[in-house]
Length: 629
Image (tube, rainbow, N blue to C red):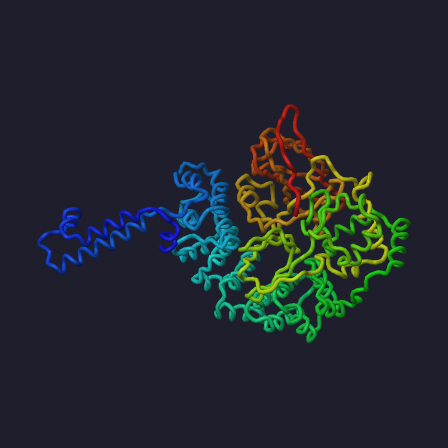
C-alpha cells in the first residue's frame, strides 16, 4: 500500500481533504453522507471516524498505480481477446518491462486453473523469475500461493515453478524443495534447481538439509551440488565436503558446478585447495577438474598446483622467451597443419569456442577470431596462446568485484551507472551487480587462463597456432560472407516422445518450442559451415538428436533453408512441419524464428550437416543469421 501511495504523486488528495472536512463538519456531513440524526454523541463521533477510515481506504484503492511501461499490452492481455499463440510473446514483454503490479496480473492468471494457455505457462514463470533475479522486481502482494505451482506434474512446468518460488523468496516452498532435492524420481534439472533453491531461500533448515545431502550414501551428483550450495553458508565446511565428494568421484562425474561455487567466494579456491590436500583424487578426476577450471578462465595457483600434482601433469610452464617464440614460429610454418588445428580448437577440454567465436558462432567473452590470421603476425598469435596476460586489449580487461555477501564475481564490464554494473563473465553470462553491494573492485587477469597448453603436445600446439594464423586469409579459412547456420543449439536429454519415432506436432510444441532455455547447449559448425554430426555421438550405435538454428527477420517475406546432409531428418519451422525435402521454405514475419531438425545419426561414418539460407526469387525478406553462444 505504501508503494502505491508514494508512487502515484497524484490522484485523490482533494477528495481525501473533503472527506476529512465532511467528517468533522456536523450538519454538512450528515447532509452528504446521511448520518442518522438519532445517533448519540459517541456514536456520531464513531461514525465520523468510520467515514475518515473509509475515505483513506478509498484513496489507497482508487489511486492510480505507478505508470506502467506496458500499459497497452497489459490492457490487451486483460481483455481476454489475445489469441493463445500470441500470449507467450506478450507475457514475455510484460515480464521484461512491467512493474510489480503488471507482474501481479501475470501471476494471478498463472495461478488460475484455466487462466493461461499451456504454452504460455512456462514462458510466464521464466519471465517472472528473470524479473525477480535480474530486475529485483517481484509481483505485488502475497506470493505464498506460488508454492502450489510446485505440485505441477509436467517436468518443464515444475522446473520453472521451482526456480520461480526460489527467486521470489517464497519460504513456504522450503519443505517441498527439500523433498525434491533428495527425491529419487526427480529429473536431474529439477533436482539441481531444488538444491539451488535451498541456497536462495537460505536459513538454518536449508543449510542442514544441504549438509545432510553431502553424506557418503548419497549419489555423487547430489553430493557435489550440495557441497556447492554450502559455500553460501560456510566455505570451510563446503570445502571439506566437496573434497570428500571429489575423492569418491569418477571421470564421469562433472566437477564444474562445485568448482564454480568456490570461485564465486572470497578465498574459496584456496579453501578447496587446502581440503584437497588431505584426500586422494584419481588422475582422471583431477584432469577433468583442471579442464573445468581453465574453461571458466581461472588458473588459481594453489588449486592448479594441487590438481596438477594429482593429475600427474607438470605445473604451468613459464612464459616463452623471445628465442623460443621465434623457434615456434618457424616450426608452425613447416610442421603445423591447420586442418588438424581446427579439430584441436574445437576440442571440448580446451574450451576455445566457449570464449571465442569464428564466423560469429561461439563465445562472446574473447575476441572474434574470423579475421585474426589476416591481421596478426604468427609470433603475436603464439604469445597470445602461451602468455595470454602479455597484451590484453582494453575491451577485454576483466574487473573483479568483491560483494558484501562474500561472493566474488569477475568479468568484462559492459556498462555501468550509479546503481549497477553489468558484466559478462567467463561463461558468457551477463550479470547485473548492484553498486550498493560492491565492497571492493580491482583489475583482473585475462579471461584466457595460463596453463591451457599443458593439455597439448608440442605438435598439437603447432597445429593450433597454424589454424589460428590462417583465419581470415584466402582459402578454406577465409571470412564467410554467405548466410549460413554456424551456431546450432542441441537439445539436452530429449524425451522419448522425440526420439523413439517421428514425433507428433504437439510433442514438438511441448518439448521443443515450449522447452526451457536451459535445456539447450550451443554447438558450432566448422569455419566453412559444415557441422560434424559425429561430434554428437555419446555412445555406440545409432542415435537421434534435435538441433535448432535461428534467424532474426527484420522485414517479412519468404525465406529458404537449403539442407545438405546424408542422414535422415525431419524439419519444422517454429513448430510447424516443413514439407519433406532438402529445401525448406517458409514465409516469416519480423522476429526470431527457428529451424528445428530431428536427425538420425548412424553408428559409423563421418556424417555432416550444412544449412545455407537464401531469399527465394521475388522475396524481399530482410534477415540476419543468429550467432553467438
